[in-house]
Image (cartoon, helix red, strand yellow):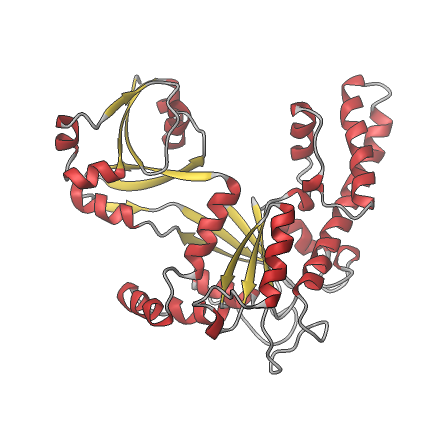
Length: 365
């Protein structure tokens, strides 16, 4: 999974990125301190892996990972080359979802590019630049289609869709709000890779003293939540500065620090949970002496396709999957005991893998 972190200058993007990846991207109180996109690979926290690794004496633990891309601050006119322009918009096209950091706290010591705090205005500014960029993409595609469709009638549906999308975007609507008429149109729409079609997660950056109550009294955060609900997006509350402090601690210190703040989870954990929910992802686990590993799949994935995540041979030669839930396995302490209790199931090709399933695949070479 690849997530792009965007937002206006000085909203806490690079500070958040630093805390998530410990990559040390430069953070400063002025626009465009991020000159090239910073990329970091982050392990998905999953306590289940350590438990299973101890149970099976695994030589190593391999967690699922997320790739974060910190994209330089966008400003009005970015789609026309203002600020650092289109080079960064093109970087967003490569991600699976957008994490949009919005500032929801007052601090006279930190300059806001527009001179005041207004998260909905900030969201609209970024969205407008993404929309303008998408319109340019559609205009170029339409110009090519008009020339080709005369000799290739298979392009008629795509041409008609581009025409409808152009009108939709010109009305100021995001591509994600367009309702495809059928599966074919949906497939074509997805192939365009439009920025305004990508799922979005809003990271509401608040002050430290508002974290414990999840910023329940913060009017800025309320407005972001209302906005996100209307467009079907996810929201999570963070304090980027606190996240940076947490990143410097070891596991025990981190847990104690979170407890002192009255928090159950870090911003990273909130973001990952929001990302998995938004993208419809789950994890299944394989565990043995060689390794205990988490595998990320789409919700609804059947056993053979899940096996194919490990190796294509597993999917081609799939016979069955021996499955036990994580909770049942841990409660009984071993696969042998779980089998004795009849809790290890033999599942076929139609089985839909569930989050937390511990799976052994049987296949022909």
